[in-house]
Length: 431
Image (cartoon, rainbow, N blue to C red; front, side, top):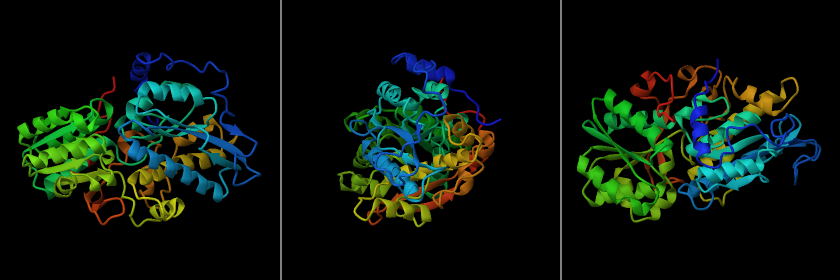
């Protein structure tokens, strides 16, 4: 048995409240067929004119949402990744095209759903689906279409979904590792506050913080806060009132910087650890920069932009010398390796690359060659989540001299809490 499907009821509930288009079969009659998203004709502007074309899709947050500063480079890195694959000859006689099916959903589940409906007949798979609630809004349609997706999120629920091809430690393990690291290295022993967006992202991280707090005999407090840098006064006041020595933040970068800056202005002397999506190097140019250097550390799924691995170097070479470093690029590049591995595996199956074979291949990966960005075993999907889920995180510190503003403080480590955790269900319930 591979990943268990636990989210069907939740997905239906989410999309029913939106536009009532999910949780149904594909009405077009073509979206679930093996040839969907694949043509014998070459891709537009093909690198290999004799190859056919595989069309991938990306539904991202490119303009208005809180993660646009990360999502734009995520998407650009994925375009560069697949262009490099094409330059290396493609996969199974096909070039890969991402350019034709990129949509901006503004971090809005309803728009995300609508954008999927527009491209569902035209793509083989989603090279990117950004956001937890956003991906949940299309999950049932992805299942009915036999479309797999690479999430631009690290929700622990994805480990239980055959349709989702994730990479790196999830938010829950990441939070456990961040708390364990702070206890061992920053003297955090008394109380930890988990502050984050309401719902899946903030909730999944907070669940991990709570487990680690209990394991370390610390008091735990959860604070929910909305999007928007101007909306953080209440969260800052709540945190200050708790007099905690550790704060774990799961928001966007702007909200995180506002919170850390506000805490520093009011004399906070503890430690702040942020989930991976809380960092943006542009924050070094903000008024909060001194506070971030003094208080903030990032828990992340892999080393930042300047890390010395063949995969990081391949990314930097593909993007070129003029790109402004941002770890959105790092994530977009790293996330793409499992989809490449699944495509290569599907190409070797009877019938070759198809939606059905790609779903099967994605669920049977024993390892993935991340070119050193992650250990190969981090890509394993063939087994129960408690057995194969990757539990190690990287802790980074603010470093203005580093390409993306952070450098590694502690390399890949699974703390005692994550190592011992019984991962038999998602940390945060989506039902």
